[in-house]
Image (cartoon, rainbow, N blue to C red; front, top):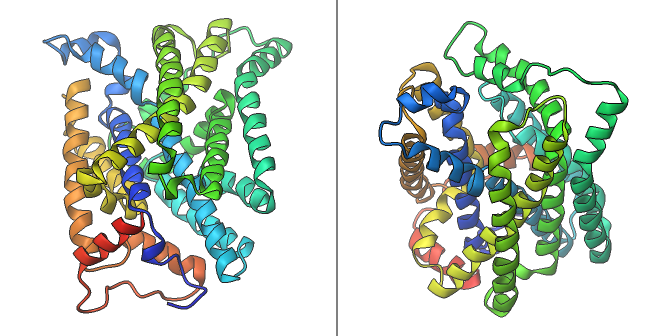
Length: 411
């Protein structure tokens, strides 16, 4: 591999790949109810799917512990990846901005294609918001920290700002809920399925701005960039006390904020904003980053305690994160949205389905990486980024177990 090529395997950290897979699992658990249509069912129909009466607990747990938190974790890892690539380019003496810009452009194209199948795609949003990271590539670490403070402050103030603007604009009626438009897009295969999904992309983008989630993503980008540039992820054992502190403080804050937001979930109108909506969105602004950081720190502590242990089995999915993310969509769209196989699943059934799908992905990703260096979409993404064909198949005679052992020693 030439000096201008992608990051070599020896530079990868298994813990980041495993954590990325963990984030993908949480995202899948959060999205399966959308694909099956459970998210959009009225309460009486949900009750018919739950004769035992445990689905309300599972649904509340989804709001409390998973929704928005694992997307924030995925965003955190995107920021860490940015910092690792920035450091790699600096050590090799290769230009960074142009290449990272090409990387974002390729990601945007993939994201738009993905959005034709799933309106909830996040890749195109990462590609656009990633430009802000690119602007910060030459910032000193102190300015990155200042950026984090500014973004956190803006995120907390955003619901109040939106509420004030709505009053100034005289919005006093209750408009149609975006959830209905999204529900219409999850009713099955139709002639306009792809066009309908792309039509919902604009509504989803407006919703991200309206609710301030774009600021949450940017905040996690910058926190991840700070972690990557300080090298905190390279020696987790040395930072054990810091990790324990993050788990304790962010975990407590995140759980309390999440618990406080659950009663608002069903009772708060999405539009126009009200005081209850401001309270709900403010709690979301606190809970998502806090629990995300607590999860990441707890995962790191378990990794250190077990020296990776069973968590290493997650790493192949993390190394093929782009492929895994999109194949989750393909499977759920075909099985649940088009064929309707998930129509009878309640909240617990959706959770079980997500675990089964992810387990299968772990097996397939491990088998694939025994023969290939990248996932198929990762390979295409790298080729587009570097403007050349990069070797996909592993060198003959290379022992994948030895490679993993070597990576583990360097993590």
